[in-house]
Image (tube, rainbow, N blue to C red):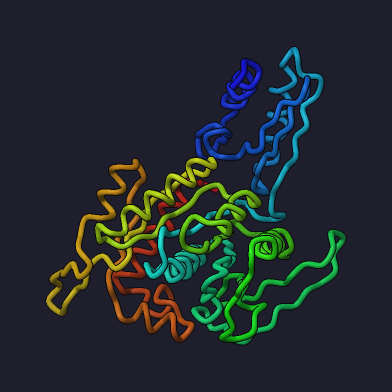
Length: 331
């Protein structure tokens, strides 16, 4: 890193996002920073409530005596305040189930929520929300054709699974996959949303990197199980997000324990994994979701436990997680 690049980054680190009380570089809002001759180029990823930060970046870069002009490209999803990703290091840990119930808990708290199912390998969210055979429509807008999200239980929903034939594999290769994902991020008419949740594919491959690079994700929630064997996968995921500048907001430990009729807890899949990785990687443990057959049946029937069994322990924990994140962002 040369002196000019260091000077530029230090200036940008002085600009604080007031809701998160952190600088825009650490929050991953500044990406693709390039210095070419006497010009600065960067992409600034913002929510709909953060547009004033562009002026602050412009003013800061204008103080560089060697910079003839800064070029700032604002990247955002129109109408969306905050975009959060839900991720996992491996499949089968309940990431999509967590995404659905997390979205429901947020919606029940009174905020406007959208859910984008970007899991191209297993787009199950339409079924989990009772939208099995729904058709996606598009409208013409001044910015071109836009998909109209569907609605279920008060949240807006879009899924790659809605564009594929039922029960057929989504066998998309690199370039096509990139194009589909980019289109889903940029070409959905979400309207006004407080939160847009993106359910990512499991792992750390092309699809995840494309979504992170093409969308203004301001944080990610990692989902894991308590067993030790899952920890290495979580580490890879957390390192990937931190490497590309996306903050890890916390960890949700799913299938943590089983509660019997007497209230006794049994750790079916081991214990301590979530707490261990949270301490090791300095990421808060947001909640531990118990094993509950109603979580499974609710997903199969399109009636998530967060609304079908609001008094259940699992629903209460999803509510606690949503309230913790609402307080973090303080919209």
